Length: 309
Image (cartoon, rainbow, N blue to C red; front, top):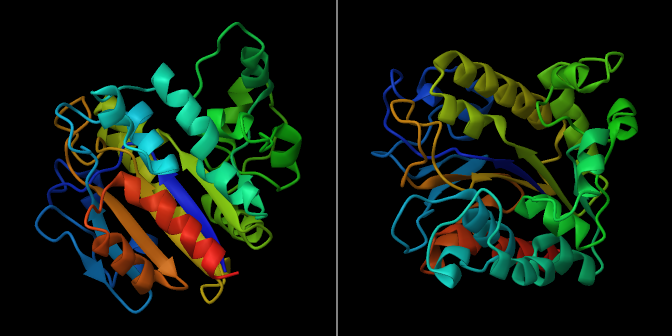
C-alpha cells in the first residue's frame, strides 16, 4: 500500500456561499466525484461515498488566535502540537524551538527510518538553491524536513523529465524564473505525472501554496484560477491512480481561501479528504483518536504505510 498527500496551504471548510467561498463557485468536478457529488461546508462537515470520505480537522489546536503555517504544518507533518509547545500560533516559518522536533519527527524521517521510500514531488528553481547558501535561510516545514532527512529537493531537470511537479502545477510560472524553454503542461497531465510518481514510492507529498496566496489577495479571479488548476490536477491524478493499492489524502494547515471577505487566516476546520485503499478505516481511526486535529495525520499515516507492508 502507498500513500499520496496533496497538501493545500490555506484551505478551510467554509460557508456554502459562492459569493464568499470560491470552492462553491468553482466547478471542482474531480473533488466532487470523490465525495458523491458534494463538497464539505460548515453545515455539512462529514461526507462519505463508496470511493471517498471527508472529515473535518481542528486547525486551532486548542490555542487562541488565528492558526498559522509554521505551527500548523509542524502539527500536520510531525504529529506534535507546535502551537501548544510554543504557546501561540506562529508562521509562516517554524518557530526556532520547533526545529529539533521537525528534524527528528517529520514524516519523511519516520518513514525513511522504517525503510520506506519517500518523495517530495515539488520542483525548485536555481534561485531557491542559491538562497539556501545564504546565512540562516528561512525555510518552510516541508523544505526544512527534507533538508534534514536526506530527501532530495527536485530541480528544473527533474521537472523537464516529468519526474517532478511545478508548485503552480502547469510550469507556467517558471518562464519568469529564467526558464523560458520549459514546456507548459496541462493540469490534467501534471496530475497523471503525479500519479505515476506515486506508483514508485511508499509516500509522496505535493504542496500547493497558491490557495493561501489567493486567500490573502482576496481576489475572486485568482482564487477561481488556482482552484481550477487544482481540480484539473486532481482529475488527472484520479484517472491514473490505482485506488486498490494507494490512499490519497488531501488536507491543509489552516483556513483562508474559503472566506474571501477577509484577508487573514480563519479559525475554520480544515478538510481531510480520503480516497482509495482503506479510506473508511483511515477516517474511523482519525475520529476515534479523540482529537481529529492536525496532529492526527502523521501518526495515522505512518501506521497505515507500515502496517500495510
